[in-house]
Amino acid sequence: MDIFIDWLNRAFVLGQLRLYYWLPGVLLLAIPAIIAIYINFQKNRKWRIRYPVTSTLARIPGVRKIRRPSRHMALIFRILVIMLVILAAMRPQMGKTREKITTEGIDIFLILDISSSMLAEDFSPNRAEAAKEVLGDFVSQNRNDRIGFVVFAGLAFTQCPLTTDTAILEEFISQIKIGDIGKDGTAIGDAIVTAAARFPDQDVESRLMILLTDGEHNSGEFDPETAARIANRTGVRIYTIGVGSREPTPIPDPTNPGNYLKDYFGRLVYTQLDEDSLRDIAHITGGKYYRAEDENALREIYDEIALLETHEIESQRFTTYAELFQFVLVAALVMLLFELISRQVWGRALP
Image (tube, rainbow, N blue to C red):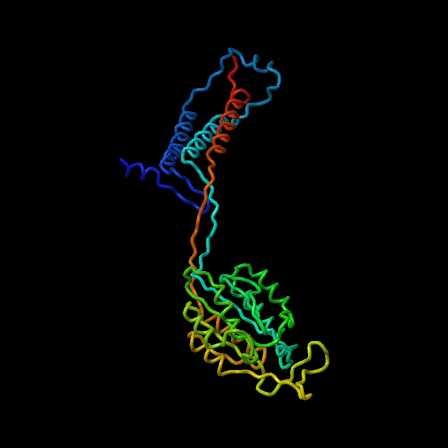
């Protein structure tokens, strides 16, 4: 019995429209039979006038001529009523579909060096601004991932926790400036530990950091190798990027525009990149080290990392249906009213 009921309730879906009970629709096949019977009846009907003389009809005011098609109006409305009642019995519903996107989870922390050496002008206009532009593009192209932002100089702090709100993250990236951290220096180890501590405890498909710097570790509590091992134990993979040309590059003085930083003896201070340490960090965590000598190379590196960390997106469709049968029944009642009116106006029998 239950199987039979399920068979009766099998829905017919056409786009966003669903007919929950399709079996009553079989009754629509009776409509052509009704029309055929009506036509045959009209052909074989013997017409007669109830009045003995036609002069009586001429005295009826408003009678000009007999409109033969008008006498079929009642049948037309009745057929429409039957069709609408059958349609209402089929329980029509209109669906609204929404799609839920579920990623298999990549959590990314972008780690950016904002020490004074990032003002070096071998990138246009400088390393910091070029890096911020590339990071902004990376965020906009990875909207399905949760991305956080950590900055560091002599200290490290979380500028933005993991989020899918790319608009606010892009705003954080664009607003960061050299000198926002009061202590200058390069605390690479502290930056890694800070980011590692902000990953949630829940299991994720992939966790990674992308660390960008142009210097060597010279500040903070944790050395880079120890920090990398801590991150590795929590299942985090680190991609490291060293930026800057291979030629010695002086550092602009942030407090004295147009001049360069000098040491105690008045000699220019040049940026120094510790590539060996960055390679070790990447190796310990199963990541990779990159060297970017210009902005195009930097952009290509972030694009390559995005391809290395590809992931699947599972889509699920959910459809919510709204009942329409009540509107169909109202239309049927309106057609029934028109049928009654048509019988009085066009199909009325004279006494």
